[in-house]
Length: 590
Image (cartoon, rainbow, N blue to C red; front, side):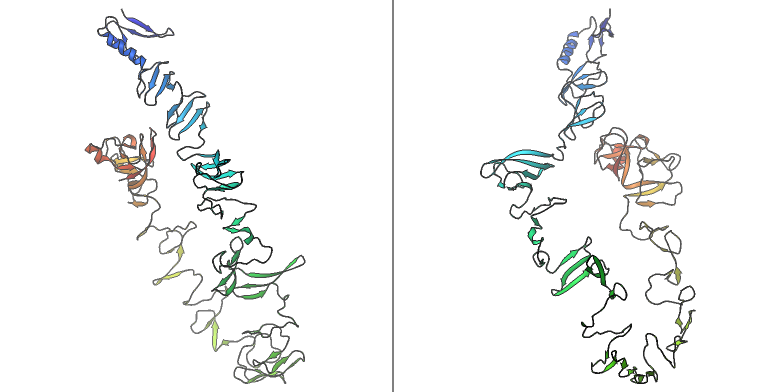
């Protein structure tokens, strides 16, 4: 007669027939008159004694069953849906599921303890993953060379002590309590690798920000920069004769060129303005630029005074009203006496004849030279207009042997312009004038668009770089496949999504660098070589070889001893990913 086995709560579990062994659970139930029942019973007791110790969970668990996880050395119990740690924390690289509020998880990837609050994991500690080093403010007690203990605060980042804060007077560390990068500890904040005498840090550890005061700047005392009297900039404070600069863009520079030539230089190419402050008003007196020296406002600034005159003024031309005397170039004869209102001497033309007689105040003879300004009186000869210039007539049309003048539109016409022009509507290429265009228009000169790109239907030549990373060719696919789909030859068209055992030829490309067969209509770019994203099923490690799997995906080839797998390997993974299901992995197509 069969036994009926009930659970502790009285519910029926299983019926065990005579002379049989029931394997419904991880313990084997023995029926009546079963030969050799002693071995079965003894193994059952042993399994209970060792709590089913194994690296993998028992396969036929029931709620309340205990299992010793020998891999993680944890005692666990089955709660009806999963095994839970009886004490300590869950252990693993990925977050466990099915936890209750207050359960712990030891994240082995970051080496941090976390607790489940019912919604998400809360970090318990350490604050920073030991994988990248601790980051904290750590209190410590150290000895000075006088064996006196001092309480300090260490600022630690990624395992390195960056700075020490101390309220004690300056002291030197005792060798019994060394700290890497520190010897003399100053009262206040001492940075790592800082010279105790000069205050200069030998490594790139800096205070970044604004300080209200400093003892030194660039290793020099503050007194060298904060001056109540005249400042002296010379060799030793900077590169010899390099001078000083002023402005947020180093606008104005004062320096010495060639060792002994002082220079005041506007480095932005704008004017240099001389400004005077009178009471509360600023007056811009003059400005200097690359073309000359000018007053800022017309007719308000004097050059010299009646009691302060320039000894000599030299100029190629003089424009304006003359008040004062004009001397000959040898300084002996007064040609114009402004005080007496008379002219003494004659104006001589370039041919040495008398062009203007100071007594009769009449121009006589042929005046050879230039007259700038108005003439009061009669002129025999040229007037305000002329039909020719140096014997050459003017014309709007592109007439040979004429002086060009602007037409009603302001344009100058010429058969050809020889020289340098700032712009042109067309350029001569060979024997044909060509216009410019941004689009890939035939018989035009290419111009970059707003992003700096040049468009062309085809580029013939050698490129030194490519924006993307794979070589791809267009094929006709039997469906519209997404990026990363692994394909093989087949289907209603040329290529189709691969399945396990196929020989993959490539992957649907995201951004092909080199595009072959680009004119194929309705084609899909298939990456045949290079770095591309690939759909992969199952965990993968960097360096794993990939072969075709079902539904256009790849999988890791775990058995390279088979010739079939060696032949069908089409790519190598470039990154790790432990996710069991489908994901995108960067890989190198061979």
